[in-house]
Length: 178
Image 1 (cartoon, rainbow, N blue to C red):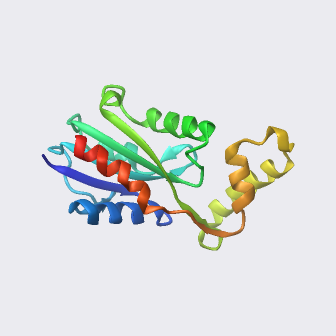
Image 2 (image 1 turned 90 degrees about the vertical axis):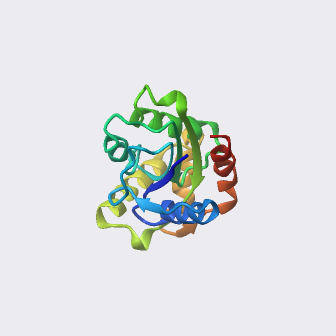
């Protein structure tokens, strides 16, 4: 069985998870825009940062497989949202399902990992976007704030690292079941 690890990371958290996972299973990890030919891949493990409701690099990776989809697809989203919150888990799952071909969904397992943010390292565009999201959440009545709004308010302007490599254990177990 041929396994592959691909990641889409803009600021580093998804890359860190992919590299740690790579060490654990002994398979190299590649960025989505430099990865190997995946057409004969049995199990694809994809780590991707969540940006604007999508998983960075996932659509491009799957499109590049040209109809020869893997037998199994394990996707780990990486972001600020706490996946233990039901609302967040639902939103993350829906974002992934919009990007995965319907025929592949029954063979797909989805995981959600906490990432991090360092506002000093964000691009100007991302800083501006986060400022707008922050201001919207700040003006919202507290009773109407969702889990994502609270996460933005808690982390805005800070350097926060919530990467937890122990969370990879579930993905390792899923790979063993593949």
